[in-house]
Length: 199
Figure 1 (cartoon, one colour):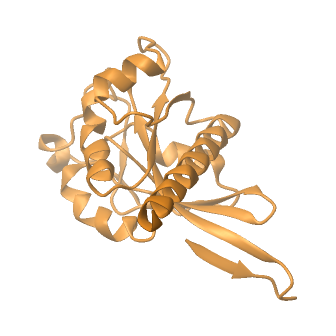
Figure 2: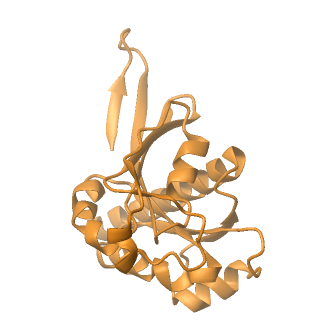
């Protein structure tokens, strides 16, 4: 979390760090690109024959590139509140980057694809073990069987109260709504922990 002050010194803006995580091909780069008000930074590389043994493209056959470090974007939620978005790489071999990316994060969005729901288990486990607040955003792909938020919550065995929202990662308004839900939820979680620590 970073506080920024204007040149006049009489107003301040809050910049919050948010991670966007999930399995390979779930739409992390798409979400960051859809909501970012600046040209997003991407570290995409073409999928290669060498990666066929480690990159499972079942269900995402059209995927031609993969994030190898991170995606970065920024969105202003309202006057005085901006979110810096860091999209994490989805494959196991890049997980060593997650600890660095998670430093100072307010919370995370875990994108899920109901066709490959098990791919988001590692991200859910990562944030639960580190007590980083997160929401699960189900990216509703065309042709995928529709499941309700309650069904996804049960299938992922989420901690009580962890929000599950349905979204379209390609749509700016949908992505922004997911981020607002995360900021509200993370704010409640951090306030509750602060009160517990002084109680």
